[in-house]
Image (cartoon, rainbow, N blue to C red; front, side):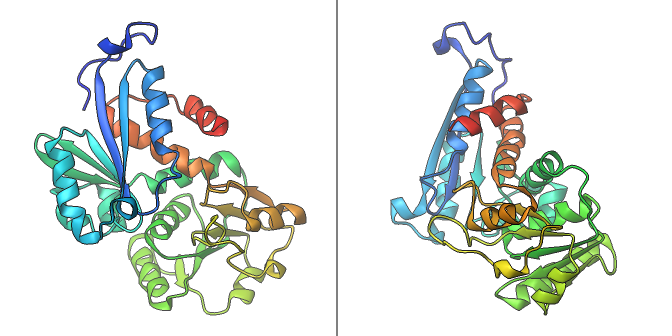
Length: 294
């Protein structure tokens, strides 16, 4: 963690305080997170060094996670971002969880401090902030969410925190949807979340749709539901940001739906992670501009 306040960006960069961070996950070569952290660090007068630790590139499996986390801590990393498929697997390796990470059962940010490993979840706030900015004033009555994995758990928590009356959750693994719905009901109250069984009926009664599945990513093309279930009155939120315009968003926009892409979630989870790693509040608007320019 950087203990010194950043120097003016015009000063000699070699004299700036440095912070070393990284991202552990699989297939993360296209991640824009390193550039977001490094460019914001430079703007703050901080040498932010951000490394990708890609399990697929290294030829490693999940069994390597304990050693990778330990090595980062030994090498003086300020912290690590954690992504698929490690957000739950990292939990037993940590000394402490933030309230949000504990409630969600998933960690995407680990901070090393005073010899301890502290897990946080910035995904839920990242989605919430992107949604607030991208779709102000939309109705949050019934919301259909597709996907109940680690990202889905964070987004569902955010949607209910923002005031969604009822979240109907669908997943290819019905048990996962049921488990997530039960967890949400325990935190937010009876009737606030339910595992869906009839997608067409749920969509007909919905005010909005959130896609938390990987369908729409470059390597998983297509839409996560039949386009015929969309209608102009719906709003549609996507968490995928590579590509920024998925087939789902393109179809929704063509119908006249209000939409928000996954860029906001990507940026705002990084905004909060940067603060946790460095102790410095980043300029969120500047990070949004950085993201848009990439």
